[in-house]
Image: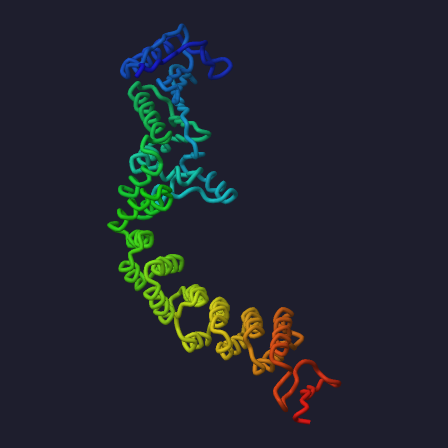
Length: 434
């Protein structure tokens, strides 16, 4: 590899319109930068006057700019900037009050599942790339980097010391930090998926390991990551691995514990792919135990019943109606409808639900599977000044569907198709009863 070249050339740097470096300052920093270059085996090209110094590596993909100047007397400062290819990384900086305001306007930044890091660092960009790049070592580098107002933005790293840099050792320390961090953020020879797998193994928190696993795209590496997560200390991570790998033994045990709604549904669906009978039995147990995810479990039961699976008898569905909230009521309308005409008693109970939306859905379902016995309850829901229009409309349409399918009434019964003169109900037309 060719040695790196450090070039210092040009005219004097003006910090203000009237300030020019003294010869002594130039000579001192000329010596400092020369030592810096020699210590790293960079070629050093001196010039008559000192200006921004630029360092290019042999691949011309990374540059280091050290700008020095004066404000009063011999006080000097340094702004170290590194330009490097950082696709997918928009911003890394310390989270300040201004960035908190920015979040309120533009939305939250990217979290990597490490609370004490996420709480103090603002991250913007492609979440998958940030998860791959920000391994444990890089997180430590960034903590130091942003402490003194370092930041990554527009594909560049910029580090400005709070105060003035006078010591050569301090300049060396900062240039080392920025160059090392640029190599981490610019990419890795492993490739993003391989780096994500490394983070699944060595990530500092369970949330970070899981987040890295979830964005692995290569199927073989994803399976390898799942095998790693099966050994994880975090229960949620082991469950995620069991879902991906299709391990019914672990899934059944997990369903007996406290889980979030989304995770519980995913576990049941994963179990269905392994063993349909075991999945149906587990779903029924979940519904009987009335977990917090009950409305979603009932909806899932309706979907599986619609596929021809037997989850539970209709009598168990009926037991859930009493006290059902709106979400559960809607789910019960969906599930009971899957039982066909035998579900009419359940739907008639749901027709009386306190929520008009549930009652309206039950009315629509009765129009499909209801008998003439449902006409009178539907008629009571089709009237009333205070009753919402969608409920009255669905009830009337259901009556029309039932009577169109089964006739206007039973022999000697009442015809509820329309009202007669004066609002009284008309007797059914029936030649045999006349």
